[in-house]
Length: 101
Image (cartoon, rainbow, N blue to C red; front, side, top):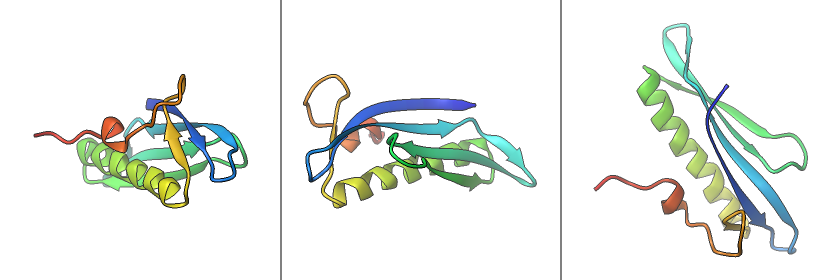
């Protein structure tokens, strides 16, 4: 079960466009810790899915969000652009992952 999902568009360096879904799973107990799934799915090929462990649900969610940001940053480093799903406005990672002040 997914705790949260965000959709955005990814424009590759070659101009191809894909809808990308970033998902964070609901924390679940695994042995002595908690685990959240993180998934990045562009619809082409298998989704990239990872299990992120924390000492409790809070830490698992925080670490999963940080991992998801890192996955998207890797897309940007590969030359992709991220856009809002309904227009051509750039999608800043700070909008998706704001920091508390």
